[in-house]
Length: 326
Ligand code: NAD
Image 1 (cartoon, rainbow, N blue to C red):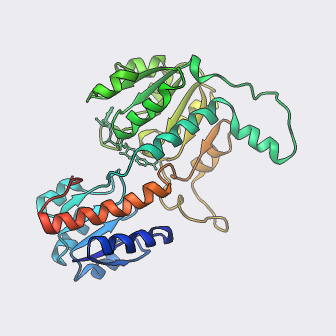
Image 2: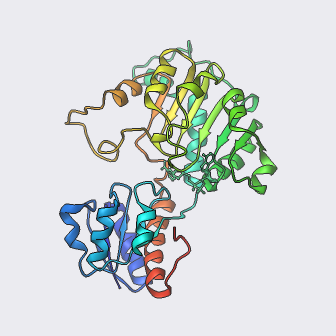
């Protein structure tokens, strides 16, 4: 069995070697994203492993099929970069990853606490020996109401983590979950929007969740609301976020992901001109924390991302299906 892995970072390579042995397959790792220019590379491989910068459009999927690839596993949980419906139509098997949700959930709690305690500003001041307190008075999580939108694996884990802080937790998801009900109260989306001090998003990016947080929703939120996004940037309208920060309706914003991050995040851009004005403008506010799509990035997650993609391709080829098949 031959697998071609795209977008492989150096820190993933030892895991590719480990799981190539375990699943007895031959794996070639390349740093490139998969695109039309290098599509011919896949000839002779049974399956491919990708990350989120290889856009699996209908045309690319057809090209893969024609060149003999039967399956594709993304090492990510999110799969909004893949035209899954078209892949099904042409019989190209697709899987995503199911690495543990704990890392992203812990990161979410960290962003909530950093936002409530003005940690970005405190860190800035420390760099220049400014040890003043003025403007840094925070709020206590135990006195606040947190709204979690999307209670799948990550949302659920965030809720469990938060349950130890003593805050009130409201949740919204069209698929309610019994475990969540032990720690949180399910309610309507409108109630989450209107009544929560902190709102954290944990839904996939779908047509129905695109710009889930927009100008109209922000207008209905509590003054000083704290918004957290460790899911996908496009869930929040960046223009509405800027407006909300400028008007001070939004009290703090913590974004691990942002609309327009492609081509910027995960690259060293120190010597380059970044032409995305909105990202540059938003990140300079004292109450906006932005990180480079790294909530997933732990040793546990990286190993499991690699393992899961190899296991999926192995099982697709040997058994015809796999546990993470989409
Ligand atoms: P999941 O599939 O287990 O859960 C998603 C939940 O969202 C489901 O319960 C689903 O019913 C719910 N949902 C879908 N549409 C909704 C809507 N309109 N309103 C409310 N709920 C809705 O996924 P997960 O493992 O919890 O991951 C969630 C997302 O987090 C992923 O899709 C991915 O985009 C993102 N993610 C980001 C990082 C990162 O590093 N920042 C890492 C992993 C995952």
